[in-house]
Length: 470
Image 1: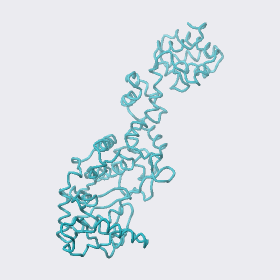
Image 2: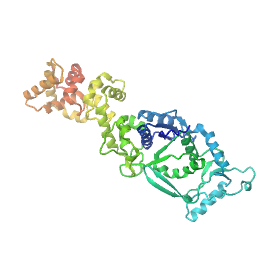
Image 3: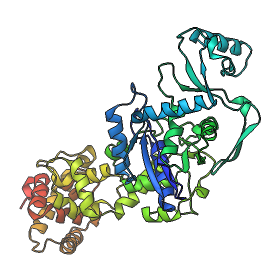
Image 4: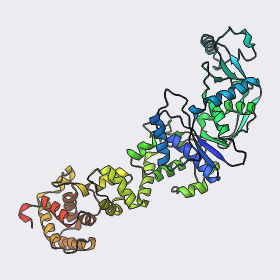
């Protein structure tokens, strides 16, 4: 299954114990872009060996989040849990070749060992007590684990594509477990076997896995397998520099979509720029990202997640987005009363200032209100007795207007303002309150046209001074 064609192969390998975390989404993106940039393959593996914590719902959430971001994967999704027999097979090969051994140390013995290390203020690591011992010394039928015989002299060097040269003394590595006492493989073994069998050439992941690389390399070398290129990306921090948490925005991709109203292309662009850069460019399309992305542009320092920056970038993509598409997305937020055709007509004026789909839906809400409108406190305050008298005159002037267009309505309203000796704002403010029930909306003449003659006049009449109507 491993390829020696020289083709780049990357993989994203999430554990399905929850949603697609924002940091995981960025790792997925970097793997996908690197493979696409180099004309290679990007693979997806679900590391679901923790059967207690892995759930079908979490797997579905991860697949859904990746699909929403537009990250399509080459080949079928690999499920690590289905490959247990292969993992055991490799462990047995390592055992047979003398690169691994059976360890019969009991739980009590290991705890005593750790207690002694703690007391001596030594690092907690397995002391190799069964490394060179004859298995015949163990009681008959005693349970055992299989441990990897890691090198304990010299040093291991990794030329990381992001971190640079990283060196670890081999004596700092302990002989870790490959197979548990129940015969099941550990994560450390499964990852290496799967990466090799999937032909992965580049392991791009968070730098919290850097230590794992030094523990995984001995398996590659013992099996005489090609070693992957490593690229360990700095983690994402909150805007205050602290480790990213839920209060900073460490949420699932679906939360940004469903609760924050973020477009996938905006999150794609934002995650791309979170730790990778190309000059001063901020807005980068998917096609440009594929063309430009390489590991040389990934920084060594943690990047900071800033929700406001994401929202501002999202506003850019909302203004760029197709109106029919936005209308469909906003209709879901408005509810069953939403008219998609009307929303599409309104979108050019609604999207000029909106930063997310919720703001678009909020801005569009006036279109679907039922009379009598419920006014906000600020709107109610605008409709003084004098303002209601002005509304009655406005209604009379507009009712005489034959052309219900922005240009005609604006000309009529301006003429009325001059006749009354008032600034246009003095007419627009009570009109906005009467037409939308709020003090913020698109341009007042856009509002009149979108609502249509009959509905607009009915709303103004409902708030105008009775004696002055019609």
